[in-house]
Image (cartoon, rainbow, N blue to C red; front, side):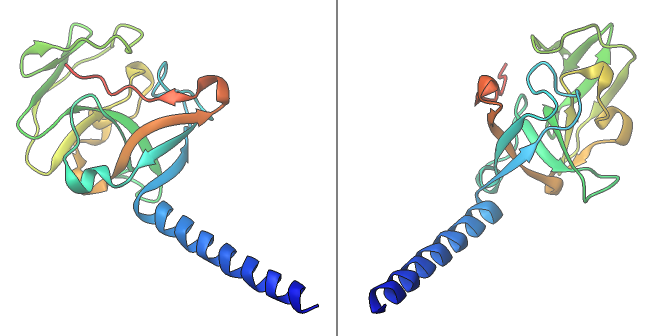
Length: 175
């Protein structure tokens, strides 16, 4: 009976340590998210599960091409996911179906169709970033609700892990 009590006590301590470790990890380092909607297709699809690196932007700023998770400015309790297309100092514009950054047409192989409408030119001020979905014609993003406050960014999308057939790194397209 003494061995059983000691085993149970050891198991409880190990479980408590693991729980604390998990809570610290999820609060400060990484967190899982579920994609909702088609705004990031073809890179990310609805109901896919991803891991977000919450530490990265404590040591560096978001870069153009990275996919970020953030608090939606109009309803901060909701999380959104989009690609960074402009950082402070950039001038962003959509015209003739293409995205231009600082007057240069961006190569965006993940944008699957002609982008309707126009946007900008918009100069990105300090403390803000411009984010857009990869599925531009089906994305509620900076074009509709404005530039994103840098402080609202929760982290960088790193890895898809569910479903297993879609598992892999999330592309951060660099120029």
